[in-house]
Structures are given as C-alpha cells and as structure tokens.
Image (tube, rainbow, N blue to C red):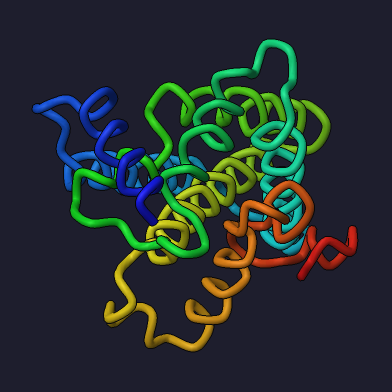
Length: 214
C-alpha cells in the first residue's frame, strides 16, 4: 500500500493539473456520447425489421473490440500505440491495484476515464470506418444504428469502469450486476494475472469465448 500511496501522490503531482475537473471530464463523456446517439437517431428513416438486427450485432462487435483492445493493446507493447499501453498498464494499474481499487476524489477520474484524444482515436479507428463500410454495403440506417450502439457502448464502458473504482460504500456497488462485474475487474487488477485474464471491462463475452475469465 505504501508503494501505491507514493505513486498516487507522484501521479497527481505530475499528471493532474490544477484546472482539471473530474466532474467536467465525466460530463464531457456523457454529453459527447448522448449527443452523438441523438444525432444518429435523428438520421434514421423508416427502419426496416432486418436493420434493427444491427443493434445486437454491433453490441457483440463492440464487446469484442473492447476485449481485443484491452488484451492486445493496453497490455502489450504495439508499435505506434505505446501511449495507450503506458497509460493503462504503466499508470492505471499502478494507481489501482487489487489492494487499492477505490479512487480518493473526483480528480482521480483522470486515471479512470479516457482522455479526449483516446476517445477520438478509438472512435476513429473502430467505429467510424465500420460505419462507413456498412453504409456502403447495406444502408444508411444500418450505419447510423451501428454508430449509435458504439457510442452507447462506450458510455456504458466508462460508467461501469468508474463504478468499479468507487469506494466500497457506494450505492452503485449495491447493485448485484455491478458488484459481480466489479469482482471480475478487481481480479484483473491483481498484478500477477492482469495480462492473462478478465479483459472485458463490461460484460465478459470475449473472456467467455476465449476462455480468459477467472
């Protein structure tokens, strides 16, 4: 615990500026996601029954992107993506360990929520190209539904991940599903196994498929 405390003090001193606001950061995440979802819904026109299947398929796609990105980018040194690896494996997992999971104030959101640059990166790398391809192969409705699900999944990811790092007496942790998912994430933060199991931050679909759930 002493090592975690020292690292937290060092991280806050070097990486969290005096103007940073955890509430504003979370607010940006919510507004960015909900605003994008509203825009996508506004673009829909006479959605056909088969087009609604985009929602569950996009959900599974997002879950597998989450799994692959976490397992092979956030815990592996991939050329050109070193910033993602350093921020996650090098910072997040030193700030939060299985013995010290809770943030100690709103300013610690800096270590949990994606910075804006990474939000744009992941959206531009995974959601936008797939949406454009779907618009070309199928229909505009499918593309807009896909992007809406991607944004909704991202928001779900951020809110659940933040919930896992709330203090133990948080009301959210009284919800059975959140409590169960937090236990899985808690296990992932054990430094001995963090690169080997429980890579889904949200729902362990990818971990179940690839047998990495522990």
